[in-house]
Image (cartoon, rainbow, N blue to C red):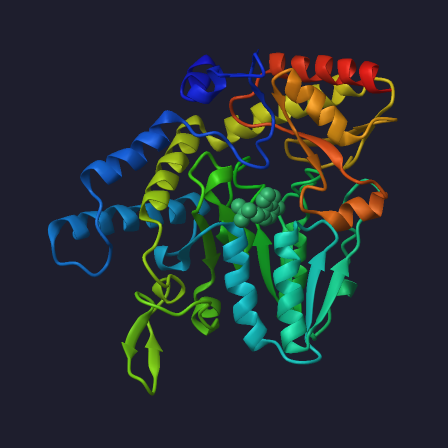
Length: 399
Ligand code: PLP
């Protein structure tokens, strides 16, 4: 643990005069020095524009960028690296698919999303449905924050099922394997929003049989501004491009444009090479630690934090699913989550408060928001103890 923490200089800093306890990993993770160095090294030694240069630097930049694509392919166990599209982030990846489907969907078709989605897996589908005339249907959830999945929610009209692998607000791990199998039985495609799964456990898109899988670089210890869309080849080839511009074309005349093959059809303009290279390094960092080791460490933190916080009078957990990743949402009775967050910040403890871009979940529980502590590779049991002491102190001041 000491050697892992050593790689994150920010963890040695102070906030409000107190050593930082960073428990906002579901929003964004901190970056190890090797990721920052990989980006600096790229700009210092290898930068040029990719894909269209004969000169050596352009070829070097292209090689590094394409090596990053191959690293993502390997990380997701995708069939082929041309099924890996670099995007600005998870939101951009979902919009890429939704805007393509907007043109494929027809009136009478249905898109099924869940009550547990982040706004970025709600709004793009609402827009696609509004513009195409398709209907948006919702998979309900129960009071534990688990999806009430039933294959009867599907019909031959269902063309797309878009759900997250792990809920960012509650930590629920969703039964995506069952959802994918049931959706395929009615020939619906499935998009899995993996933003909160990829930081915590290994993903095998082939074993899952996911049609699309998306995630963000900045949540897996990589840089901001880069994300990934994986898709099955036949679906990506059928999907209309999201944006037009350079690099995504085969031929352009004023009367007609033909598109480049995948993945380039979806990567209009100069891509974020530095971001992809930083992401490559971040994936190496996680793989070297081992995804199983990460999952079991974070699970210990989650269980310990749940147990210790539950001793505090007036604590109420929001999201008590049987199957959870390392996200803990809670309220202190009689205290507004925002006030708890401000007091914790005074103690150097960074948690997130609010609706976590999941307003329908907050509406379900009839609450304005929660306090959310989310754990990462570098968090420790001592930090959980600090959180618990901090919440106790906040409660004694506010209630
Ligand atoms: N989906 C989930 C489940 C998330 O938690 C997030 C971000 O918090 C996103 C999508 C959007 O990710 P980004 O803002 O990096 O595009």
